[in-house]
Image (tube, rainbow, N blue to C red):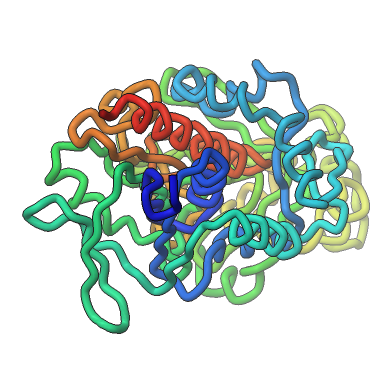
Length: 413
């Protein structure tokens, strides 16, 4: 079979899911054209690697799967087929050595995304994948052909199979616009509304607090919260004060439950433990210790270890009488009430929730409403915290959708 006679697949989206789908398809002898709206592929992938590319996590499979909450069972076959061991072996074949950090997270040895992407694209181009940049997909025309806008005009084309890997709704400037939602809906493909995930929240600080502390890290704290089922939780870590509220890794890790409660109730109350390493009895004893001529700020810094932004939070959130009541002050240090009033916009979020519902897909991630069209990556209806889980699921679903497309092509007359 000549290349022109080979089965033809179109992949739309040049993020990790689309690139992985293209790799699996081209290695199986399929002629692959990959289209992307941006001038180059992998832009969000490169941004994610700026602080050190977290590829995946080495924790046990059952724990890993639990990070995807109710969508864990749907994703299990894809996560099992491309687990941490398989992902590291894949990186090794690209010439990218990896290591397991002390937290269990897995990174490239050089911590960078660019070398991996360069090696990957080199392999894909050598294998025959054809890349079409600045081609923005605009859905289907009346005859079912794919429609693309590009600098020279409008292009329509068809293929034997199509893999959509269009991303979610966060970071529009990097290509994840969510513009595809109505186009899929018009074809009868069920899509859950896109929502912010791994996101920050508004609090409504006073101008004085914002001016002084926006951008300051809030280290070594714990957050206490109650989920929608009334179950109490505690998680330790660090976050950051933003101009409008709070964000950062500790907040992102619990953002889904906080978001859902704000959606249901209009706000959500959490409590901050500013010194999780000290028990309440010890904190009370230290606060109540005679301070002589020292200021309260100096006293709390020397006796409890509070200073800077933590002291600023107490002044922002407590009334004056509480500072004159050792029991109330000690209680606030261990359990400072904070009300989150809104979710930050989806375009600021690290990722998004919602997307193409698994219930409308077959086991190979093909849409039941439009046979021959497969979906992969963040455009699917799942979410996960940061820590390698997002990238792993994107790669795994891209791989799975490509295998589904191969099966579909094999069944075609």
